Length: 234
Image: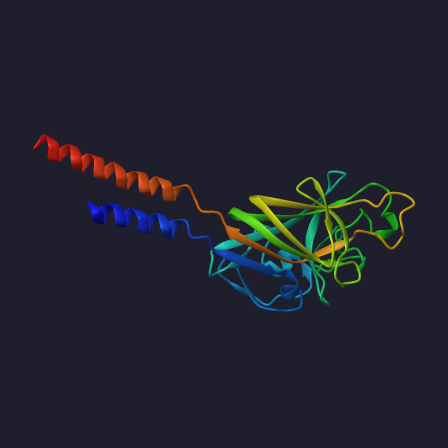
């Protein structure tokens, strides 16, 4: 019976061990290889998500943890846009209009900002970069790049909450499968340099232990109860 308890405890411990993964979008945009969810090696580079990763519904896979992510985009006017890898120490942004080869047109509209670019920063419209994970995760850190590809300081709207970022790095504790990063429109009269346009350089997540581990333990304890009943009956 002790062995049954020990086995259940060990199985629970294994199932609840959290795995972490960091998706370095800047590195992928600058040409670093990665594995997609079709188990294919991809060379990285600058273009839209479908071109770089292998399809709009194909994700980037962290092999060690089994966690994968898909990037996509929408706009505040109900339109769709494309998650876009911008090279030169930038990262993942969005682009509305693509060339036949998956390049952004115009080339300066590849970050997350107002619809149509920085000239419309105060018009109240915004773009959203969406990260969708294949399982429940805890988003623990996001690194942002600014419009000029340096460290981002400004505001973003993360899952509906206005959030300040200083020096490019945001430590978080958000659990979910889908995370929306909205451009925060700059109020009229604000310093023109405060555009709030950004890229995501990297995102770190950890797997949230699945309830299956508790079911596993419950099954083991149920077996112990049945064994006890059999012994009493005999």
